[in-house]
Image 1 (cartoon, rainbow, N blue to C red):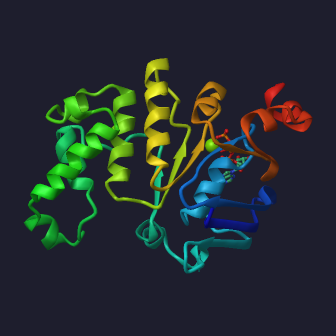
Image 2: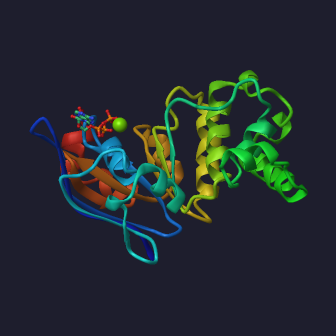
Length: 246
Ligand SMILES: Nc1ncnc2c1ncn2[C@@H]1O[C@H](COP(=O)(O)OP(=O)(O)OP(=O)(O)O)[C@@H](O)[C@H]1O
Ligand SMILES: [Mg+2]
């Protein structure tokens, strides 16, 4: 598989504490990857570094076919380069319908005039319906987003990120606060999304990770402790000691 993202030798300290410690690993171009590990292992900080929110003290973060360094780019430039990130708190427009939220999220010129003059084309509307089906909200297209459940808002947010067509989607603890049925649907959405892009999911729910059925990277103290299938990493004694056996 072609490498999409390569993190190598990355370290970052907060007040002298090394949250990320010589971290190195790679993500392939249409890969689904789960990242697990104990609280404070550096999972969220890894995403902060890739998205440009946190600047590492050392190391390299290399992106895409042209091997661009993401470390020289702003958060906005990294997003435009094709990195999407799902935050915990959904940021949907509650008064707007599901359809309008998805239309607003489509990859379009973003300057003020084009935003004002923008009318969704037939192709855009078709794409929006496609996205709505992907996230299981086709029947809710005309409902105000405020009427959705917590889980459904999370899916809408994922749909809005997919509308931007990112090459890499980073998702931090998507299952938190969801019902078991919503968790299952969320797995399906992410598995489907990863067929055409890379998706990296941080999650503590092991049932959820098992359903993703993908390669797993275990972080501990800011570095990779183990990597491979879920069965492989969960039979690793160090992983059991620092994470599973808590
Ligand atoms: N901006 C920051 N300032 C100071 N310390 C930070 C900052 N961001 C993260 N840390 C610290 O870095 C360490 C790694 O935190 P991080 O949030 O990446 O862990 P995590 O693996 O996401 O944990 P969790 O599973 O609890 O979400 C923690 O000790 C945390 O307190
Ligand atoms: Mg975290």
